[in-house]
Image (cartoon, rainbow, N blue to C red; front, side, top):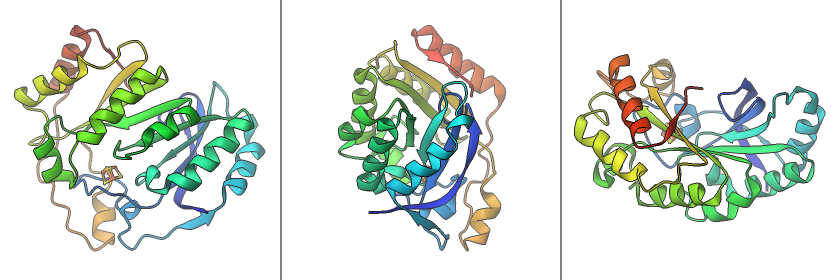
Length: 241
Ligand code: SF4
């Protein structure tokens, strides 16, 4: 099986440690209204295909670029929608001593199968309340919470990313619910990053023929710092990549 890829390029430190070759895999099972890669949701976007062997060869050919513990990261869209060729590719990369990472929305039911194939895990967590999560993204957060626990208990390096969206997940009650959940997450190998809303994807939505529905998503720096401090107060590490 081949991977469907809609974008690739090098990125330093934002998608895992060091300099990394980042593959954006096509397709997503959520429909977050603020998504900056709506073409990855399949709205008429274009992609090309590559086999696990081809990706491994490409990664080997640029191994010298993987400085500061870099390697290969798969993101999206949602990379776990292509779990079978993804797992095969991760295995091949590891066999060739190339560091592996994924960024995922956390909804893959068999995520436990991927964990042994990963050096670094980035998992998004958008809202602690399942109904609100489903209403906005189309999917409950139940499996995401389970997968965060699995990842954090695996001992692998885990980065949890929260997009801060005004009117969705930055009110006091929601922040308290986030903190309540984070109390149960392993603190040793986990870091948490708060990403303020931006409109980088707005024009792409229009190009895809879709309506961009976020009206007032911006969040102040004060709200981010306040939330970060609360996360630190319960003993978790925060990070800004
Ligand atoms: S999970 Fe990520 S890629 Fe999928 S719609 Fe949401 S923001 Fe976009």
